[in-house]
Image (tube, rainbow, N blue to C red; front, side):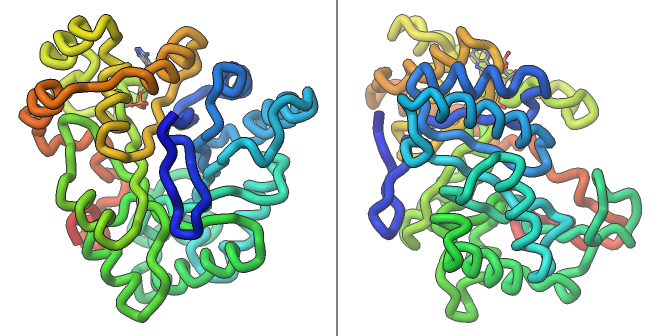
Length: 316
Ligand code: A2P
């Protein structure tokens, strides 16, 4: 398994298990299956509302003794309603308590968007948001770095940040995030963002690598293109005697991005891990390069307001 290296030399298995959309009653079993299948990287978030069940599964596995806490990299994310600097530590401690852990390996600011403290669910009106003046992202980031200094997380990073936002974070002289987790797949290749992150020593994780077709219908665009049914991906899969999902995961690995396919299906979980041994050749990579549609499955619609406060989160 390829590993990525943080700036302090710590490493991370490049393939992890995603847990967004993994239903309660299923996610714990998925985590156990994944750890048994060799995964050592689990991606979580408070907003997935399943961290308590993930925590129980981790406990069960660790208590068996073969896999230890320190063998597994666990990521979680700060939700948008806890961006004020005094709210970061309580949010992280709630996540730690749910996951039944003393520390995280990586804590990310989930979105560069702030909600009113205490807001449950998604905003329904303008007053459910905080403006960047009310919740300066630099202060949120400062609090994240404090969490790392306190040992509550080993590494700190962000998610869904554009190059402009990454520049803005660093403008005050602050240390740059160690990770930026963003949507990445053949229809959204984001080469410029990748090059920027590489230049500045920021690792990148690819989310929704398989096209996230299990998200709610209300989040889907009309005539959404399917990644798993793409003919080019299918023919590359056939050539290597692999599955389309394995090709999509191997493509992310070939680009040195961590990748977190979500699955609660034991067969998929194991097959996705087997992508680690699939090597795409230069012809495959060229054919996939030609598939870029600049298409986002996760468009940030929930953050659009009448005033346009967070209208262009992926570009601004
Ligand atoms: P399932 O949980 O039944 O495996 P993403 O990681 O882009 O969010 O995509 C998740 C979706 O992809 C889920 O619907 C998941 O279903 C499905 N999926 C995960 N692994 C595979 C696989 N190996 N083959 C087909 N579909 C998969």
